[in-house]
Length: 487
Image 1 (tube, rainbow, N blue to C red):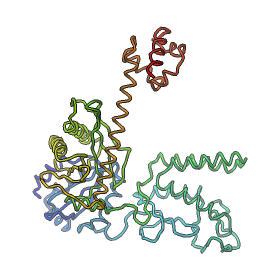
Image 2: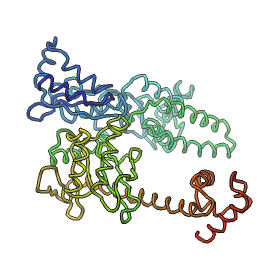
Image 3: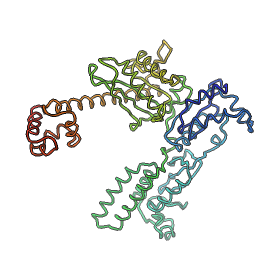
Image 4: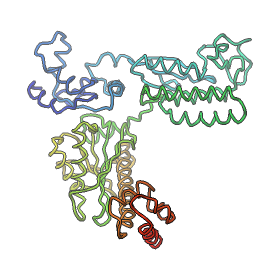
């Protein structure tokens, strides 16, 4: 790749964490790296003419294209880098191809599982949590686990339903660091419950774990087991303290939790340069052109991430015009992405046909994002439309790639309808108040903010409404009478 051309392309890269993939002239991925700043890291390859490392000089000489995947943090970029290297096996990545770089927590497959740290993940039926990108964080979690979960670390053979394997417990049990299943210090059910709690903690599901522990704490207090209740209380405090430090990785792996088949199949069927790690799905919903809403849903690693969904109230389009509504939605969505508020996807899916796709592509080109892959999925025949191709792609109805696209499309449709319905109902309810003589928009906003909904206001008594500043008994009676008729 020409140096000037490369630097011009890199100027558009975000100054954010992520993973970059370098490709040769045949489209093969030859190197994958991570960065705290994609723009700064990738540009460093092209700032110098001579390289001390022959390997690096050869890598740069073979680069013909570069693609990026934005992540929310540097830690997430490290994890994604490791996974993509395992998947693509790039020629110039040596370290991560040779073996695991980051440590995992392994919960062994035994009657009384052990907790150990390993860098070599195997497919042995054990539960692997991680990878952890900082060993310091891992040690902090292990100290918490040792203090409050008290699982065994020894290799003594212990089988459920058999006689104790030892005559007496070891010093770890005396110190309260082990439940001592080797001398029947606990039942298998009690031990398994601790293991399940630990998995919730290590996989970052602190809210779920805290909810379970609160119930146990209340039950212990009712049984007047105050010492145990106090222990659980301290445990809950420790869990929330750790959760605020954001030590957790986003993955819990049992064998290999990520189902790569749909993503790999989509990459193959659509001819994508990289795995569609993140897919954005778009849809429009309205009632005869009224209360039009555009939405985007986000799928990461083939799974929906509702926390990243966004809705847009269409502002520039009047009457029924799904095409321009789609164009406005993409323009506003990716305008925010270019401001650094959201990462860009590897694939965009439009609910509709070739015309909807054309308007979506027009929005992307105006933003300088024409290189992002975009397709449209039409209902009924489930045809996939690709830009600049007249013939639609038809995959087998059981094709894993098509199934994933259908899930994205159906979720976008569901979210669009729900968003439109909420907007319509909110506008309808608000209009009931605004139609009452003497109530302006400011007073309506004040009432809804204070009481929450029109239905709640309708249940109030006259004197309760009259106490609201700026209303008085006359206007309060008028509101009650109006809502009593319309509700």
